[in-house]
Amino acid sequence: MSSPDALRALAVEVAREAGMLAASRRRQGVRVAATKTALADIVTDADREVEALIRDRLAAARPEDAFLGEETGSHAGSTPITWVVDPIDGTVNYAYGIPAYAVSIAAVSGPPEPSSWSVLAGAVYNPAVDEMFHAARGEGCWRDRGRIRVNSEVLAAGALVATGFGYDPATHAGDLARLAQVMPLVRDIRRMGAASLDLAAVAAGRLDGYYERGLHPWDIAAGVVLVEEAGGRVAGLDGGPPGAAMTVAAGPAFFTDLAAALAHPPR
Ligand code: IPD
Ligand code: CA
Figure 1 (cartoon, rainbow, N blue to C red):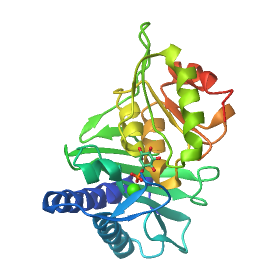
Figure 2: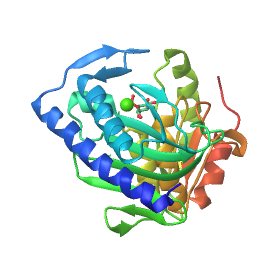
Figure 3: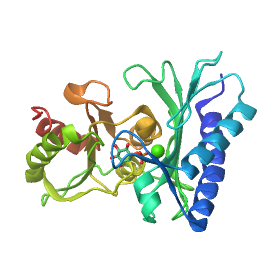
Figure 4: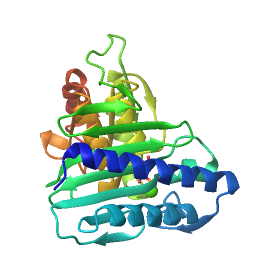
């Protein structure tokens, strides 16, 4: 097994190449190839092509590792490492030409499930603005060549918090009720449309906190190690692991308040 830093370096290299492919396909024009589970849950030809490139590059560099990708599913490996990949996170932004989408690549050990994995390294690359967020366990978190950290204090006037609304329409009423619970804590709310970039923004101190339910392993794998290595916390409800039921991320000072506001959820 390689060091977290070697895994990080590979994630960065592949995310950059994949992001440049996504951006070039974006310039050529994007076609929605299919609607998946709901109206907002779309896939473009580029999602599939970018995931194929990532899968090929990772298999060439580390053929024994396992893989889990949003568009092509999983294959088993013979090492403890699984690469957890979202080829384009923020596909709706991508389809509409909003420059907030990212390639997200993480190396995890253990089962590729937020309840039991340990995320060793991750890279989140937004090619539209050429920003690479990356971290390796025990080595800190970086934006390009600069070290980044979560906000350690939240101004008295309130926190800047991002959230998202899962694709399942049955969850929307509950999500809106939950937002009402959080509003008294905040200076303002953002819904930017790419979970990996929301987590990267918490790591960089561009947000004080972020929460969302309905997320998949590939939405959060890289972002978890970004936030934790930037000095923040990521968890689910009641301090359990993050995952589909809830993912909360913030600096240590604000995390407790945000988690408390979400602790008694509406349906
Ligand atoms: C989605 C984005 C979005 C979040 C959804 C995710 P996708 O990922 O991260 O911000 O609200 O829950 O599924 O489908 O664009 O890869
Ligand atoms: Ca995606």
